[in-house]
Length: 263
Length: 242
Image (cartoon, rainbow over all chains, first blue to last red; front, side, top):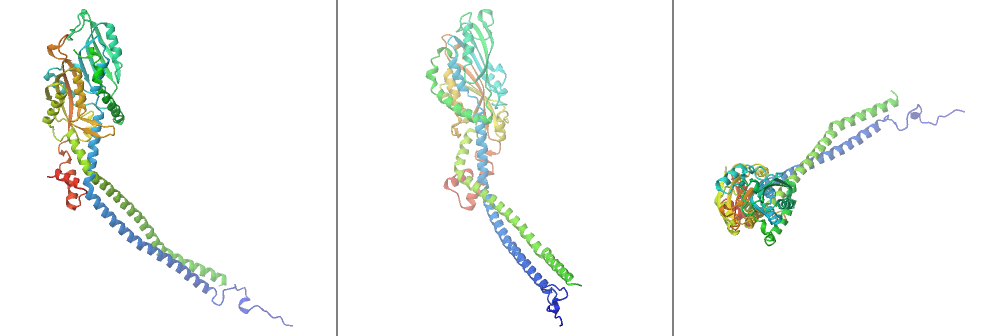
């Protein structure tokens, strides 16, 4: 009996299935075609993106240019508003950095005891001239004082200082005065410079007319809290506004301290 | 050459062809697309910025009339020139209202650049106009005078600046009995001296801006485009550049 090999002749010598007559070349061609198709798709997609983005950029650039030209046309308004803001801020800062003189003078009138007469009251803020400005009743003296103090206004942080000179009926009254002065709103320190009985011969230039012959002549220096910084100025200004509002009601109440005014 | 060798060669050749196609054709195109994408983002940001500027400018344009009015008001507090007659008039009026005699006024080194508090003033270029004046009155009248002088320019609770006269900063005050009237039974009048500083806009600036720049330029768009934002603005522009 003769054996018959049923395996086809092209597949007998270990040949792989699917190689076929082209020896796998067909698959290679298919792979290449598929790869090229994929790349063509990707290329086309990228090309489309490029084209659309070029258009988009051109459109955006044109719009931006248009907006910029509009902004340039309106720039004077912007700079005008900026200038207004700058000036407003500066004026606000200057207003807030002022010392409330009216309030302090109102407080002086409120706290001075009745047995006290004041012969001079000098106050200054910041780098104002030295305390020698006390005898400034003449116009020439005033001008000199201004010349010295004009270089500086009232910078934040500067300390208001008052020098009060006068006479009292007795030394205990001077002590009472010192206590009362400490009650003034914003007073930081009250320092007695001197309190000498007139009989001791130290009257100096201070008028002792309203005081007894042996009444003490005193000189007191007061310092107030430093002026607030710019940051704190706004809240201080609000507070000061409330004070000034109360000041406007004050004359009737302050008139009760009859001995408190300057004489 | 065995069948396996042929397959390997075919795979390598196909891979090389595809890689070359990718590297030479597709990849550069995609890279360019990505670069353009970044450019689009940048252009969008630029457009957004420009739109923001325009919105800001339009807001400024809509505020122009109000801002012009407040600038004019500020100009009353800080005028472009020394305006000494106006200052004297205001002091005189204030002292009259408070029953205080206005004796004398003297100016010292007028127009010096301010320092100190005026650090802020200097930043805006304000110049200081130091002066002093003397007066006579009762204690409480003088107290009210100080209040009046301060009230020339004040801040409201809402933060607005209320201006009714020159912005003054009082630096020093001296009070003393008035002449020979001091003493028991004499007049209760005091003589006082105030050293104060008024402020002046820097040279070259007008009430509504620098000469020939902002305010003048502000007139340009309204006039040139013919699209005035509002009638008050146009009127204001006319005031700036008659």
